[in-house]
Image (cartoon, rainbow, N blue to C red; front, top):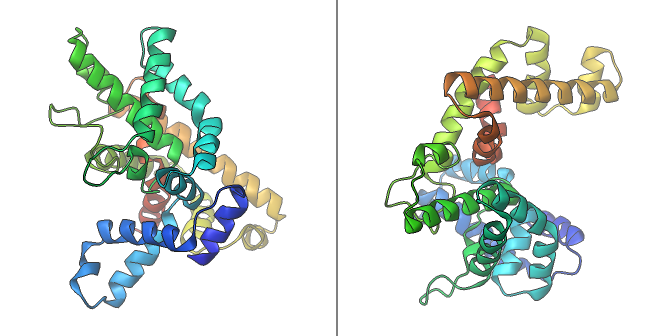
Length: 285
């Protein structure tokens, strides 16, 4: 934990976030996703699950949002500079015009800043739990806000058009619900099925390379030695395989699940933080 905190501080050198506060946030995430931690004795299996969960967290993003949630003005300015353009670009995609997009962007920033509950006094950005990229999380929040606005304005827009970005569009869905809930679960299921099909199209050697890299933890130098090639060659090969898998998954989503081409990236954003885990699981089968 201390190592992750130190590395995050190096990236966000002007932001002051105590180690204790950072560790407390991480502990809350573990407790939420591994409820059996709070039952007393912690088994070795649970400890392993906790370590695996912590290994998947986006620590630098979590450091930034935790500092923002604590009211650090420097962190908020850093967040605004880093994500304002992505927020506006996403808002444009789900808005009728630039004015509506600007209003949606401003509303999001206000919602992220202000406390959401009188009892807890917690801002919306505190709901980010590091499971997936912060940018992907922001995109999901914007799409939820857009859907809520459509409902409030009673526009004659089919919810099916937005179902891919946010599969859970029932009347009970709220922006305040944890982002890593049913929406991400459905996205993971769809993307994982497409990923299995994409992996089946690779050669045995290509699957071996992915096995070594993702499952066995072999570094690029070691993979290069196995291939009798330079580690830069191994790096380029892995990058090409990632690109091929991404294109194959995109094609499968469009053909198998009838996802519109311009909606594919949003669906993958929902599952993005979990794809590496799924890749390891699929390769180990």
